[in-house]
Structures are given as structure tokens and as C-alpha cells.
Image 1 (tube, rainbow, N blue to C red):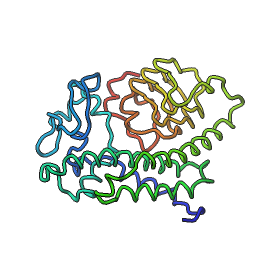
Image 2: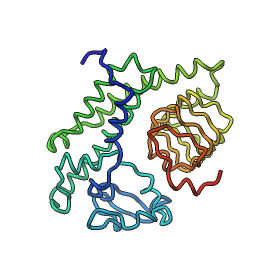
Image 3: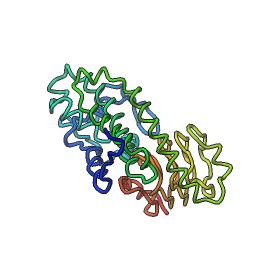
Image 4: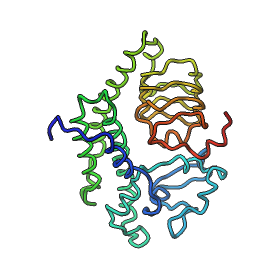
Length: 293
């Protein structure tokens, strides 16, 4: 593919993202089967991977879906398969569910976990292509997006042999370049480069930190632990948030519209309200109505 290849940004991201949204009606409750969880704040009970959740009905609907938050199933409200569920159900397995074909149940769960990773990479790559500073690497990003999409359509035999870790590493190299290009442009608009930003980065421990007065524009918060951090009113323009842990982080009044690599799952576990500004692909969680301004 030519390095000059460039997707028509005005409409391409929306078309891709439509396929990266969960469509539970066309899935077989795969997230309710494939995932394991332990009794914790997000789940009131233990469940092994491959074991159907006790709340999953025979029609693959959740019997307590409308009261998940009240029943302490916050982990369920936070989870987002990014469309991997319906892709596995309707494409990889051609509409055959694990009840009809129990012999495929284990494989279906394994494929779902891999597909979820690939769809996450599609989400990041699609966003990267919309960012103006990434113009110099649009060709590489486009090629990687095409290759990632191709992998989601592999046959079952090829899928289970896929080295998804190696592919993630290849994609991550481009996402790192994207991050550097975006953050460098944001920092050029600042008179100084805050000293505290040098301490930020993957895995930064910012648990319960008061970041209300911190200059986080163009900061690297990759994989940062922002659990219960106070980000009220923070401007996160150009901030790399890939893998950041926002559990119970206070985002009331924060501006995340120009942050990069934010996902719905991250927002779902945070605390926000009507004054929290989100990027257009992200939906405001309904349970945020429980948090006062």
C-alpha cells in the first residue's frame, strides 16, 4: 500500500466505530461466559472463565440488566466488548451459539478474548487516523488498520493460532509515535514544560492524587493509576490516556474532548456529571446521574 494512502477522515471513523460498539442483540452473552471475576467491589460473587453468569438467561439476556449498579455489579456496567461479541457470534461462528453447539463453547470464549483485543486496537488506530499531527504516518496507520481488520476475519483454525501479542506490539509502536506527535504539538503551545510531567508515564502511581491544579495538557498518562484521583476541572487536551485506570476517579467538570486513546470502559468506571466534557465517540454513562455537581 502506498505511503500516500489516506482514508477520507470526515466519514471513515464513524463507519468503523459503528462496528466497534457492542450489539448484545446479535451476541450470545459471550462476555457473561468467557470472562472470570472474583467477589470484589465490582462483582458480588466469584465466576470462573467459561462458566455462564447465573444472571444469564437462556435467550442470552441478563435478568438483572436494569439493576446492575444497585446490585453491586459495577464491573458489568463498566465492561465494553467494542463489538467483539457480535463479530465472533455472527462472523467467526456464523450465527451458531454455544448452546446449539456446546462443543464449540470453549473455542468461542477463547476467540472472543482475542477478538476483543483486536477490536481495541481498531479503536485506537481509527482514532489515530483522525488526528492532524499524525499526517506523516497516515500510510503506516492505514496499513496497520487494514491488517488488523483482516485478522478479525480469520478462519477459526487460523484465529486460535494467531500471535496477538506480537501484533499488539507492532500496533503499539505506531500508537507511541502517534502519542509523541500529538503531545509534542500540544506542548509547543505552552510557554514551559511542567517539571511534574517528567514523572508521569506508564504505570505512574497517582492513586488518590489531587490533580486539580496540575497542568496535564500533553502529558503521558499511559497506564497511570488514577484510582480515586481528583481531576475535577482538569484540562486533558492532548493527554495520552491509553490503559489509564480511572476507577472512581473524579472527572466532574474535566475536559477530555481532546484527550487521546480514551475508551468507554475507562469512562464507565469513573465519576462524572453533566459538566464533564467527553470526546464525541464516548457516551456519557447513565449512572453518572448519581453524582452531584
